[in-house]
Image (tube, rainbow, N blue to C red; front, top):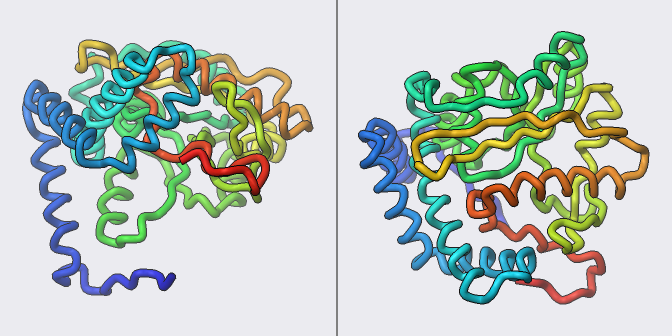
Length: 305
């Protein structure tokens, strides 16, 4: 399939829908908080009814990962996931467009001593991020306390990519392209902390299979590889929206122990276990809408989606 070619002129009519979306995000970012949250809940309801493929992925993931729940409980969780995802959209707008210092009094930040210790010792740190619906705003909130580096994958649309990158650069120290492993390692060795999220299916070539909610999942080995190359501790970070939909909790857990062990499967299992532990606090806030189990242990196994 041929790659889409985007015009060099960013005012080309092809970009007009992108500019309209960017303008809408600016508008949403400045709404009063109650209206912002109401808009997010509406987005979630609309996505539940119209984003049928994403709803299917979510339903499959919930059935696989929460078999102890009744069908009614699973369906309610799917609805809650889309609600949280809708709130995540308006939070993304806020984080990309605004100075989020007005939210600082709404943040509870626990476990900061773990990152403080790593930075004081000059070791740098690998921050184990997780794809919660609040992750983008969470990164901006984290930036009120620490300026860390972050890995990012450039968007194919250059206008939208510029908007996202400019918004994130206000909250992070340095944005490192996902393919620049050398640059990432160099920054961590220099004592910086780098935010890395390994909780998606990146395919068989860069993964081993390890249990995730009891299901064998393709689990990237890069976390252990980076820890081995830098000697930096790996610090899990949770970011959750509290039930009041207006305050947030950030928490660093202690660094992973005996990590890396030299056993890729054992290391991936440890990473998956801590990710699962944090997801279970607010399972509806995890981004279940992607095909987490698209790569199967045996390539001849039937697909789950």
